[in-house]
Image (cartoon, rainbow, N blue to C red; front, side):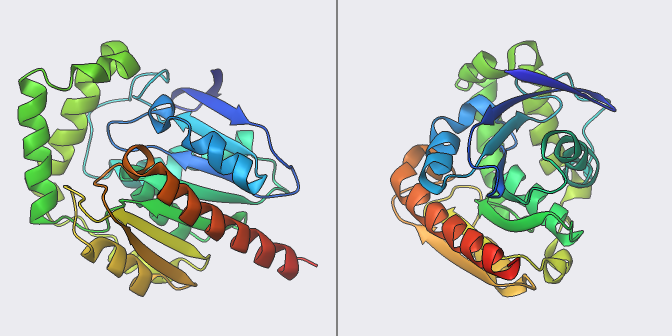
Length: 263
């Protein structure tokens, strides 16, 4: 992996070759994830669309440097409005458009970022994103805590190394904190003007279809939502073919519309 120095640490990233005339697809991982945990999906989506890709570990994850300070309820906003813009400024040329593809926490970060109406943003794909905290979300996280305490999530160490406990305790602690119970970004959605696709597994253990319905109904620009059958919270692992088909069709449509508007 390559590395990039930003204000608060080091970011590890992977650059996927593609057509420089097309938008760059920027992949944002989940709350326990990293670039490597996306598997082959980023490269396959780039190959299907011709787009360049950028996949990176947020601070505190994977091969990036440790997160500065304790995790707080505003960590998703900090990632969207402080860290992500630094990465984009350094790794995506100013004259190149970009699209965000975010899973879970990464999807929420994409929506928060999109609400700021950055001029280079061409579109957003969310996968199992959250816009509010549901009882099912918290129950799923408590189940994850029990599994982690029982040693059933030891495989996370393969990706996060010595940061594994900080990643898990930081993520789970932030979501289960009483202060996070009222977290809700639905008021931001009308400010998102770019085309948005909201995808979610029909059996997602961390959220109901209310999440993608809220995104589709709340986004200010063109939006669509789809439940992917026979998969849960990680469609890129559980039903990659269905995910790739939906995302590739959406990206190609956005690219076409974007080129028409700019000519």
